Image (cartoon, rainbow, N blue to C red; front, side, top):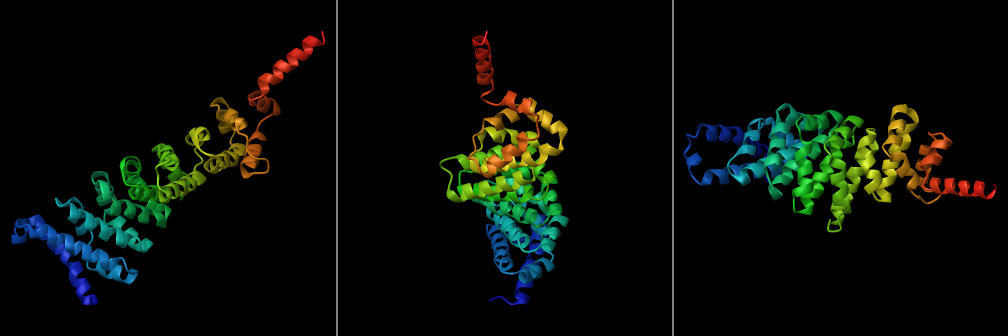
Length: 320
């Protein structure tokens, strides 16, 4: 087991080797052993850091930031991946350590890394963004402002491995669960249909479906931007649909403009076409929505309205 002194020595190696690599004067820089050395240093620090807050703080106190961020752009894929892994292991422990990474410019660097990396090399960056976002609204906003949402959505859509898709869905959920503003940022980036698509895909693993469902639930629960939710009324299965309809039931009673828009967009008609089981939560949410409107409006957009009109017409003709 390494002593604290040995850990500090290992951590102090990062600023030194980054400086030497930048200067391109050290003999190791020109040999094949240099990338392997850098990769092993970062891997060692990641293995130390992952175990506890105290060990993570020892590593951070050796001033690996911001120098380790430069390694995210190293020419060697293993150096980049192991540097990202080390940053992930620091980020996961406490809000203070996550904030330190943000203050050092780490979110922007990690977003760039996730944007450029592919496959398993992408995973530590994806998870680091999720860990940072999980701690607070402010830290999640740093990921949003640094344009971290598009590469995470890209990973959900394009990565062939389900475990990478799962991690990306989880990270998106960590961003969106904090506030309506965070949820709107995800909705504006078209994250909801993408998450729903992987949830519904029959080839998706159970873990991916679980992560996608949890992310959808977390984001929808904070989303009050109703136009972003309306497409889900048509595509979502009932176990997701109830969360969507619940948001409409929360917002519509208090927003006149939203009620009008919901009618003109066809949303009310779609709600009235649903056939929820009596006594279910979905049925309660539908009732809450219909109670926001005059009876004449509800009748007009009900599925059987045309038939009722024809029946009335027939009855009046027979009575003549």
